[in-house]
Image (tube, rainbow, N blue to C red; front, side, top):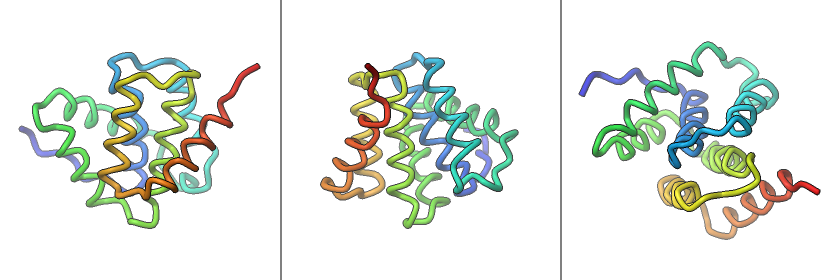
Length: 139
């Protein structure tokens, strides 16, 4: 395995969003637009260099192709992301998963894995998930 670039805290947030989008092996336009909107508009990304998006995406894709790549990715994320941003990370992942109006089996399992890896309280996770569903409802 080649040496992976270190992730910044903001790269870690982006990596989780990309991972949720890619886990079902079908990255939808709505998910990409959601990631772009999040990076362009949320205060946490105010100083983020959007040119890093393809670099982070390539890192995620390379890791997901490896046998223990997901574990390695979670290790990089936990190593870079301050604990106070764990719920933010989970909320962003939920928003990306809900962006296309449906959360598939692989996406639901990935959200569960993220919840466990980031030790998100189940009650807090349910509130975050409900908020994502509410924001992405259609008529």
